Image (cartoon, rainbow, N blue to C red; front, side, top):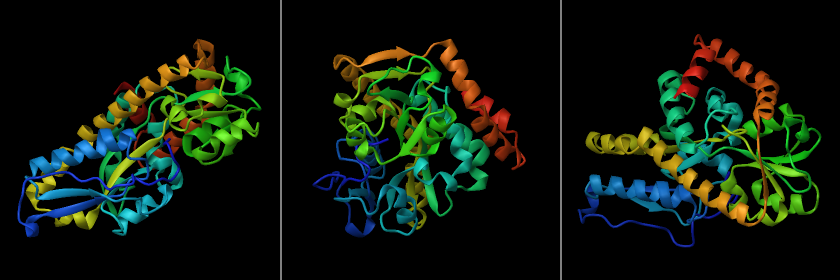
Length: 335
């Protein structure tokens, strides 16, 4: 979940100073970001990551943030594959049918932090699923996930799982949609930027979001209750991707530097960014007087039971590929 469904990366494009080298020796990589310049994915991930790579390559590789995104969020994968920009990120929930294997990252009751979920996701996904090439056509730099998804409501608190039954819940698609359906809620799939009006007008009763998204979208005033769920009610997985031809055009030495600051290194950076934003948001939500219910053992048992079909469907999908879905899921939870 992000501050804006589609927004410019900032009024002014960002660039970074690097060692002075002949222009011919430089490769300039363009970054298309569809969240605001102040978002953690920019200021805590892409910007510092770019600076590290520029420094390590002694300016042979430079980065330029485009003044606005080259596409809508769901079209970002194709835009990078087709060379409209060199680097961007995607939310797998926008393209759920294209990335079925990665769904395990978003399952409920798995991890209390984005960092734990993100690093485990990278390790397990690359170990077991890299060979299926779900991100075919682009260079996959990393995978990460936002913090624990929660339930927020405007009129009635959600003290037990059964309290979600019949409530109209705004979701963004992907796992949040599946979770709402499994819990007996009535999901309303709308972009996050419409959430305030939907809540204020009584069109929906609540939303599923991580904490940071509530404050990012300025929804605090439209909500009264939040239910925090140990392990998360769900999460969304994301990928940072690069145009394959542009990656291939780098020297072997510079490719190795890009890869050193990608993968697990980048997944940890992303997770830590989400976690910082969640901590700040939780303080803001509590200061605003939003009443918190922490899901108890019965609540968690009900979630586990009601979402078994989601887990089992994923396990069956993986079993059909000749792997053990249950074993991989157990490994992910252990990680």
